[in-house]
Image 1 (cartoon, rainbow, N blue to C red):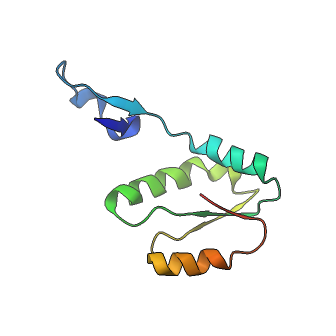
Image 2 (cartoon, rainbow, N blue to C red):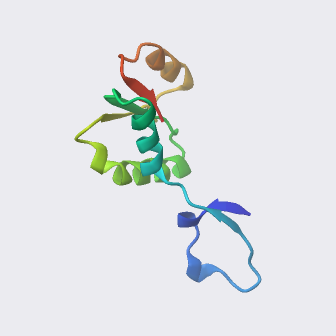
Length: 98
């Protein structure tokens, strides 16, 4: 199966297990946003609210703390899709969506 490496405890694998792991680099994603859009002041993070999405939302927030002095992070995870679309439509200038 394919999975992000942080979701698989290595000590639970046996010699008969096989997986393809990936490593998400959230810092690189925000670095890229700020390189392409250097005037960005607000980044909206959208995952959803399932247990898996809550897991990733927490990981992303923790990893992106070094950027908090440069940009504001806003989460739309608890909104319905319709509410997200409405909020995205009126984002202020210099905003990006993650």
